[in-house]
Length: 110
Image (cartoon, rainbow, N blue to C red; front, side, top):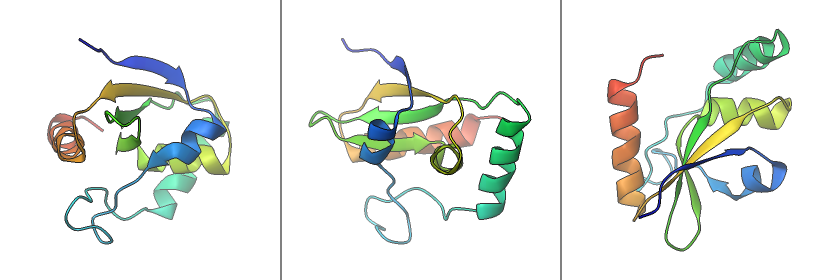
């Protein structure tokens, strides 16, 4: 049985992570629209030394990486590198990753 692993986000990894947006892929997409205000707030917070929580990534059987939670953190990291971890979970399908997104956002605390 595979379990999650925690890794540093790298440039190569960030380029591999797929972000399935609801507007562009209604069948599989589940990520909301990106907020640049939120992204910029995260960049400021990281520069001030605030801890930025890890992103959640699903790894599919074909080794594709699908973002489950943390699109604003990932986008902020791409714009202004800071320490960022990813928790990578094995997922059987995009549908399972979408279900994980719903569960995370329904029960998570911001």
